[in-house]
Length: 80
Image (cartoon, rainbow, N blue to C red; front, side, top):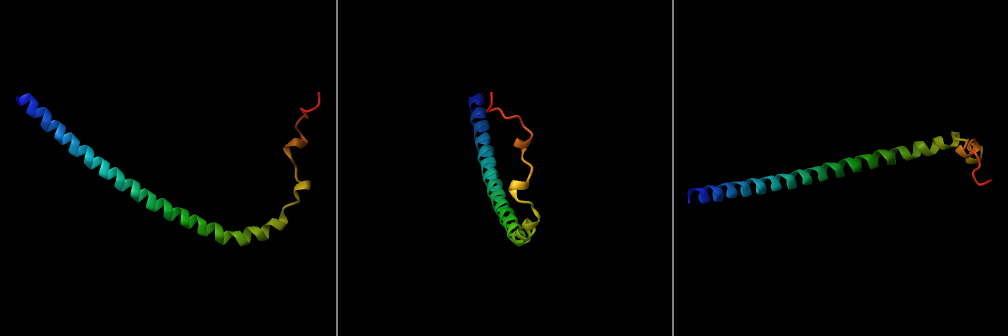
């Protein structure tokens, strides 16, 4: 009977530890989600603030037709 009581007690302790760990995981997941949402919002703010500047700089880029393309130097595989 002692072995059965020890096994039951050990199982009960393990169940409590598992429940405690599951609660901690949920807390960490919630905290991570909150912090990641804050980071996403702050990144969006930075991108929004940069949008005007970037748009002004686009005039310095050459037109796509004048830009180098990888196909300019690759062999044409469509011909035999």
